[in-house]
Image (cartoon, rainbow, N blue to C red):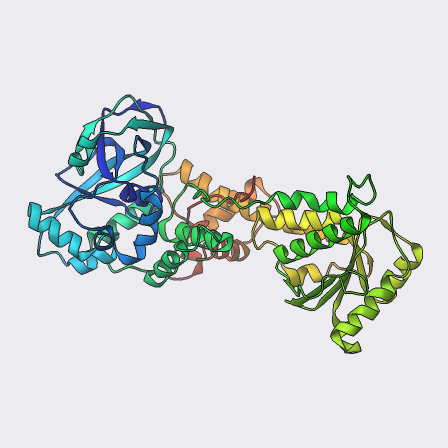
Length: 490
């Protein structure tokens, strides 16, 4: 099934249409002619549209943000060939089709459909099963291609396979059925949110991550959406280094500067974990190094150097009390001391008496890396339970292992559903089938009830690793594979 083969032709489509097909945002293309079922061809992107309309009138408003981005990717000299398609069905529509509903289910406006009917009497709606190419290719630009929009052109030898479909068979068939029957969109509000996020995703990491998750849910793509934004995450690997810098040779910086750099990276790390940092407290002489107001109060001191001195506990209590102006609040707050050095025996004893947790930079870096690889995996309220009085590194290591085991279990459940799909003609499975297959090869052993809880979690809109078909009761719910659980930073 996944053997390589070559395609002699390609269908010319607007670059934005092809991008929508590759991301799973649509399963159809507008053709200038009827395409027979089973025909295979490459997807040739052009900077032209099927009819002479502005892009603002050609595409639905909530798709325009994607258009603005993809249209810029068309180079004046070459075009990238990224995917090929198999036509599963070609539907011929006329003026009697409810065009407003057709527009809601696709990326094009009612005006586009009306002009196509006016120009060629019918709309040729080609249902395309799209696959990523085994090798990306480029072809020279030709002005004549603009005239071939919606039609076929010759294609030089291009290696193709069915190894990487954009959508699973299950998801494609569901989307195809919905569009054929003109069933109303299920998640119109979520689509509006996704498109609103698209306008800021190119400059905002959080917006991009959320948008990609929504795309996974809405469009069921089996291939991870590549981040167009590449935030500099190298700082994560500097937490330990900045903590240790005052212990080794200082590379030309003063100890004061080394301490300031360490404070800054600690604040950045805590903020990345989800704490709300009050930046009016920036340490220095007589200042509180760390103050976090959400999700709970946290006050802290950063100490660089070979040892963490005796008076650190007194400093933290005094400065924390001055900031909160309430002894009861300081008692309720989490008190954190972080530094690369070894705490003195007196400090360790004082930390236990006053409920202060002491951790080293390695522990913070480990937490931040886990959060980076698996966004939102760190539960700050759960973490709070492991910030024990005295040295807390070993306790937090237990928490990290607990989270990693939890992720591993969920990843195994997802893999089981994927394995079942590969081994059977069925694409969705009931809880008992999944639980039985899981328990044969994995631990801990699960009951049907517990397995169902995990499956529902993994198929929720905010995760989208599995799909769910609700049954008459929880035992008859069916689940199918959408995407693997993989680290986001590898």
